[in-house]
Image (cartoon, rainbow, N blue to C red):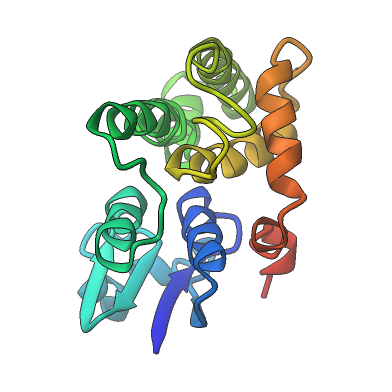
Length: 207
Protein backbone atom coordinates (compact mmCIF):
# COMPACT_ATOMS: atom_id res chain seq x y z
CA UNK A 1 0.00 0.00 0.00
CA UNK A 2 1.21 3.49 -0.89
CA UNK A 3 0.59 5.87 2.01
CA UNK A 4 0.56 9.67 1.64
CA UNK A 5 0.86 11.78 4.78
CA UNK A 6 -1.05 14.80 3.64
CA UNK A 7 -2.51 18.15 4.64
CA UNK A 8 -5.32 19.17 2.34
CA UNK A 9 -4.14 22.76 1.77
CA UNK A 10 -0.43 22.10 1.62
CA UNK A 11 0.91 23.01 -1.82
CA UNK A 12 3.61 20.35 -1.61
CA UNK A 13 1.12 17.65 -0.63
CA UNK A 14 -1.23 18.87 -3.38
CA UNK A 15 1.59 18.23 -5.88
CA UNK A 16 1.88 14.63 -4.72
CA UNK A 17 -1.86 14.04 -4.96
CA UNK A 18 -1.78 15.25 -8.56
CA UNK A 19 1.24 13.08 -9.38
CA UNK A 20 -0.20 9.91 -7.86
CA UNK A 21 -3.59 10.52 -9.46
CA UNK A 22 -1.98 11.00 -12.87
CA UNK A 23 -0.21 7.68 -12.39
CA UNK A 24 -3.54 6.03 -11.63
CA UNK A 25 -2.28 4.29 -8.50
CA UNK A 26 -4.25 3.67 -5.32
CA UNK A 27 -2.95 5.26 -2.15
CA UNK A 28 -4.03 5.77 1.43
CA UNK A 29 -4.17 9.32 2.76
CA UNK A 30 -3.11 10.01 6.33
CA UNK A 31 -4.29 13.45 7.39
CA UNK A 32 -1.69 15.60 9.17
CA UNK A 33 -3.47 18.64 10.61
CA UNK A 34 -0.89 21.41 10.42
CA UNK A 35 -3.14 23.89 12.21
CA UNK A 36 -3.42 21.49 15.15
CA UNK A 37 0.35 20.93 15.23
CA UNK A 38 0.19 17.29 14.13
CA UNK A 39 3.37 17.80 12.10
CA UNK A 40 5.29 18.46 15.32
CA UNK A 41 4.35 15.23 17.07
CA UNK A 42 7.04 12.61 17.75
CA UNK A 43 5.27 10.17 15.42
CA UNK A 44 5.41 12.55 12.47
CA UNK A 45 8.91 13.80 13.24
CA UNK A 46 10.07 10.19 13.16
CA UNK A 47 8.92 10.11 9.53
CA UNK A 48 10.14 13.59 8.61
CA UNK A 49 12.52 15.37 11.00
CA UNK A 50 11.73 18.65 9.22
CA UNK A 51 8.15 18.40 10.48
CA UNK A 52 6.73 18.95 6.99
CA UNK A 53 4.28 17.31 4.60
CA UNK A 54 4.10 15.42 2.38
CA UNK A 55 5.64 12.15 3.43
CA UNK A 56 5.21 9.27 1.01
CA UNK A 57 5.60 5.65 2.00
CA UNK A 58 6.24 3.61 -1.13
CA UNK A 59 8.38 0.64 -2.17
CA UNK A 60 9.43 0.10 1.44
CA UNK A 61 10.78 3.65 1.61
CA UNK A 62 9.77 6.73 3.58
CA UNK A 63 10.26 9.70 1.29
CA UNK A 64 10.12 13.47 1.85
CA UNK A 65 10.34 16.61 -0.31
CA UNK A 66 7.72 16.67 -3.05
CA UNK A 67 9.98 17.27 -6.05
CA UNK A 68 12.44 14.58 -4.98
CA UNK A 69 9.51 12.18 -4.69
CA UNK A 70 8.12 13.17 -8.10
CA UNK A 71 11.52 12.56 -9.69
CA UNK A 72 11.69 9.17 -7.97
CA UNK A 73 8.27 8.27 -9.35
CA UNK A 74 9.48 9.30 -12.80
CA UNK A 75 12.71 7.30 -12.59
CA UNK A 76 11.45 4.15 -10.88
CA UNK A 77 7.81 3.97 -11.92
CA UNK A 78 8.11 5.50 -15.42
CA UNK A 79 5.57 8.19 -14.51
CA UNK A 80 6.56 10.40 -17.45
CA UNK A 81 6.83 13.62 -15.43
CA UNK A 82 10.18 14.58 -17.00
CA UNK A 83 11.17 14.52 -20.68
CA UNK A 84 13.66 11.93 -21.86
CA UNK A 85 16.13 14.41 -23.35
CA UNK A 86 18.54 16.06 -20.86
CA UNK A 87 17.81 19.57 -22.16
CA UNK A 88 14.08 19.01 -21.74
CA UNK A 89 14.57 17.64 -18.24
CA UNK A 90 16.62 20.70 -17.31
CA UNK A 91 13.90 22.96 -18.69
CA UNK A 92 11.13 21.25 -16.73
CA UNK A 93 13.25 21.34 -13.58
CA UNK A 94 13.89 25.08 -14.04
CA UNK A 95 10.16 25.77 -14.35
CA UNK A 96 9.38 23.53 -11.38
CA UNK A 97 12.06 25.06 -9.18
CA UNK A 98 10.90 28.59 -10.04
CA UNK A 99 7.69 27.78 -8.19
CA UNK A 100 8.62 25.12 -5.65
CA UNK A 101 11.92 26.66 -4.52
CA UNK A 102 11.67 30.38 -5.30
CA UNK A 103 8.02 31.30 -4.85
CA UNK A 104 6.12 28.85 -2.67
CA UNK A 105 8.53 28.61 0.32
CA UNK A 106 8.72 32.34 1.04
CA UNK A 107 4.92 32.50 1.04
CA UNK A 108 4.41 29.66 3.53
CA UNK A 109 2.35 30.46 6.61
CA UNK A 110 5.34 30.29 8.96
CA UNK A 111 7.29 32.81 6.87
CA UNK A 112 4.36 35.20 6.44
CA UNK A 113 3.61 35.12 10.15
CA UNK A 114 7.25 35.71 11.07
CA UNK A 115 7.52 38.71 8.73
CA UNK A 116 4.38 40.31 10.12
CA UNK A 117 5.48 39.80 13.72
CA UNK A 118 9.08 40.91 13.22
CA UNK A 119 8.02 44.02 11.30
CA UNK A 120 5.63 44.97 14.06
CA UNK A 121 2.76 44.78 11.61
CA UNK A 122 4.36 47.20 9.12
CA UNK A 123 4.37 44.36 6.60
CA UNK A 124 1.20 42.30 6.69
CA UNK A 125 1.24 38.58 6.00
CA UNK A 126 -1.27 39.10 3.19
CA UNK A 127 0.75 41.90 1.54
CA UNK A 128 3.91 39.79 1.69
CA UNK A 129 2.18 36.84 0.07
CA UNK A 130 0.55 38.96 -2.62
CA UNK A 131 3.86 40.60 -3.57
CA UNK A 132 5.93 37.46 -3.90
CA UNK A 133 3.34 35.21 -5.55
CA UNK A 134 2.65 37.95 -8.12
CA UNK A 135 6.35 38.43 -8.81
CA UNK A 136 7.00 34.70 -9.07
CA UNK A 137 4.10 33.99 -11.41
CA UNK A 138 4.90 36.99 -13.61
CA UNK A 139 8.39 35.58 -14.14
CA UNK A 140 6.92 32.13 -14.79
CA UNK A 141 4.65 33.58 -17.49
CA UNK A 142 7.70 35.02 -19.23
CA UNK A 143 9.53 31.70 -18.92
CA UNK A 144 6.63 29.97 -20.69
CA UNK A 145 7.41 31.93 -23.86
CA UNK A 146 9.98 29.22 -24.64
CA UNK A 147 8.98 25.59 -25.00
CA UNK A 148 5.37 25.69 -23.83
CA UNK A 149 2.58 23.96 -25.75
CA UNK A 150 -0.70 22.76 -24.35
CA UNK A 151 1.17 22.46 -21.06
CA UNK A 152 4.22 24.06 -19.49
CA UNK A 153 6.62 22.02 -21.58
CA UNK A 154 5.23 20.77 -24.87
CA UNK A 155 1.99 18.85 -25.01
CA UNK A 156 2.44 16.44 -22.11
CA UNK A 157 1.83 17.05 -18.42
CA UNK A 158 5.15 17.38 -16.61
CA UNK A 159 6.49 18.12 -13.15
CA UNK A 160 6.23 21.82 -14.00
CA UNK A 161 2.46 21.54 -14.45
CA UNK A 162 2.22 19.61 -11.19
CA UNK A 163 3.89 22.57 -9.47
CA UNK A 164 1.85 25.21 -11.28
CA UNK A 165 -1.62 24.03 -10.27
CA UNK A 166 -1.21 24.38 -6.48
CA UNK A 167 0.54 27.73 -6.85
CA UNK A 168 -2.32 29.12 -8.90
CA UNK A 169 -4.79 27.79 -6.34
CA UNK A 170 -2.91 29.78 -3.69
CA UNK A 171 -2.67 32.81 -5.96
CA UNK A 172 -6.42 32.98 -6.38
CA UNK A 173 -6.96 32.60 -2.64
CA UNK A 174 -4.49 35.47 -2.09
CA UNK A 175 -6.26 37.71 -4.61
CA UNK A 176 -3.45 37.84 -7.18
CA UNK A 177 -4.42 39.59 -10.43
CA UNK A 178 -3.74 36.99 -13.13
CA UNK A 179 -5.00 39.06 -16.06
CA UNK A 180 -1.47 39.73 -17.33
CA UNK A 181 -0.66 36.00 -17.36
CA UNK A 182 -2.86 34.54 -20.14
CA UNK A 183 -0.63 31.62 -21.12
CA UNK A 184 -0.28 30.44 -17.56
CA UNK A 185 -4.05 30.64 -17.06
CA UNK A 186 -4.77 28.79 -20.32
CA UNK A 187 -2.48 25.93 -19.27
CA UNK A 188 -4.11 25.82 -15.85
CA UNK A 189 -7.57 25.58 -17.45
CA UNK A 190 -6.46 22.58 -19.51
CA UNK A 191 -5.04 20.94 -16.41
CA UNK A 192 -8.19 21.61 -14.38
CA UNK A 193 -10.18 19.64 -16.96
CA UNK A 194 -8.18 16.48 -16.26
CA UNK A 195 -10.00 14.18 -13.79
CA UNK A 196 -6.74 13.30 -12.01
CA UNK A 197 -6.02 16.98 -11.36
CA UNK A 198 -9.58 17.81 -10.32
CA UNK A 199 -9.58 14.94 -7.83
CA UNK A 200 -6.51 16.44 -6.14
CA UNK A 201 -8.21 19.76 -5.36
CA UNK A 202 -7.97 20.72 -1.70
CA UNK A 203 -11.75 20.92 -1.42
CA UNK A 204 -11.97 17.33 -2.61
CA UNK A 205 -9.49 16.23 0.06
CA UNK A 206 -10.58 18.19 3.11
CA UNK A 207 -11.03 16.05 6.23
